Amino acid sequence: MMEFFAPHLPLLELIFIGTGYALSQAIVFRAGTFSVATSGFAALGAYCAAILTVSHGIHPAIAVALGTLLGLLCGLLLAMPLARLRGVYQAIASLAFVEILVALILYFEHLTGGPLGLHNIPRVVTPWMLFFAMVGTMALLIILGQGGIGRAFDAMRQDAPVAASLGVNPTKYHVLSFALSGAIAGLFGGLDALRNFSLTAEQFGFGILIATLSAVVLGGRRTVFGPLVGVTILVLLPEIFRPLAQYRQAVYGLLLVVVMAYLPFGVFDSIVMAVRNRRLGRSGMVASKATS
Amino acid sequence: MSALVLKGVGKRFGGLQAVSPFDMEIARGKITGLIGPNGAGKTTVVNLITGVYKLSEGSIKFGDIDLTEAPRHEVARAGLARTYQTIRLLPDATVVANVMIGMYRLQSTSLLAQMFGLPSSRAETARFRDEVYVLLDRFGMTRYADYPAGALSYGDQRRVEMMRALALKPEVLLLDEPVAGINDVEAAKLGEIFRSLATDGKGMAVLLIEHNMRFVTNLCDYVYVLDSGELIAQGSAEEVVNDPVVVKAYLGEFEDA
Image (tube, rainbow over all chains, first blue to last red; front, side, top):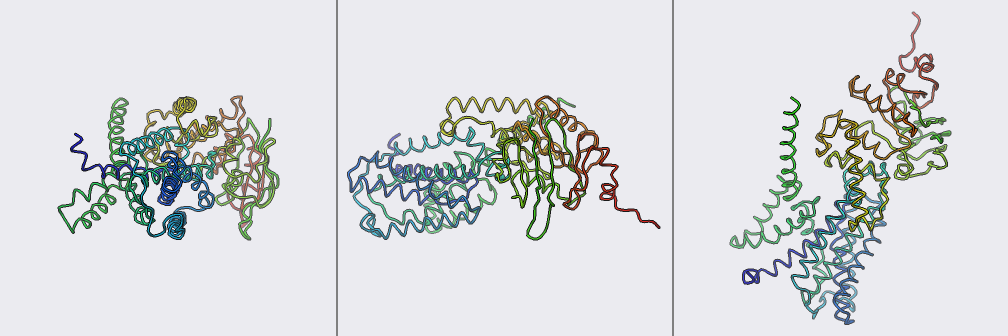
């Protein structure tokens, strides 16, 4: 069993980390905000964990925890100005936040290593740790989604004015979704930094932002398993299409377009909806038979 | 018992006077009617009360609570619920979820308890669910419980919206044309529900906005008439429908040949 998995371990790590980022992205979507700040929070978590471990000799576990906290605080801070914006304006403002952060990382060379990045980071994070971090985050989001917070998020996403007229304070839940998003991205950023020996600013630029966004849209943005499915597809597809050599990227892009055109709610969410409709259809028939 | 009291409330959009300053009292245990031709400003009044629009002048008080400057969610938390003239549900959520979000005001568990699914939060969700099914039963909607609200017929969507407003356990219920597009038999049934809400001892204050005169005269204890943003008449239903000013607003003026 282990022999089969061993060569694929890096892929699994990518899936676990990617899912963490995608969950951080999905939680703001669920609350009806269109922020793409996830990779910025991840960068903060990553640099915080790496700098503390390498330059200050702080225990990696504490460093990662502090990275998570930094992501959370930054989420809180960023939520204040962004809660005033809606839709695409929010997306642009949060994109600016990511770009500014990447620029700052390049600028503060003595702290971050600038364009050369940080190196000699101890590789202490194992695939199992990543796996448990992912499962733990998913469990938290599932539990949170079933209670009052989930109900408030769902209402805000579908009709914010109506949610407000029912007593839901929109600012409070905007801030909460940003804080959660920041903490989750900070955690996985920290873990990402401590499994890779080196860290550069480009890792958290536009590329990862788009990859995270497409994973969420592809897999599904309402269920907690949607991001996992999306990331798994995005990580595995290029491997499956390896024999296609230089056409690989083209086929990969085409597949993305096809899935999004025909399964607009994402692969996993579409399946969930189809199953639910089937079940309702069947029970509906029973009900109408009973009355006739 | 305290009532919702509007004093000198008016609204201007830029230079346009949408609603001229008027006084209104929505008493508990009664159904207060607000009627008027299309475009008279009836919905604007509801939007002013619920904090959707800011008042240009005047004040709104509910008992000791000053709602003049309150944002929407605080108005709701004070116990005011509304329905919309054009139905506004959460289309993808199930009927149960749509009604349950109405109970947000009654939530008492802390954010942390909810986040980690502590027993108190789980028990609260279970209790809310039971209460939702009681409401579903009252409106005869139990068999649609798990359907997405957007898939229901127009009349059933109206019922879901009504149930959501009632789920708040409101002290003031603002109904913006609740029987528009519903046939007379069904409307009469809803009318009975409204009447029982106002008179069943808890003494809910109900504001009913309508332009179906027959429905209003059968149901309302006190009626205000709005025309082109002006309050032109008020009084008991019979007084108001026989008021020549109101007849003129609704039917126009007869010209002598």
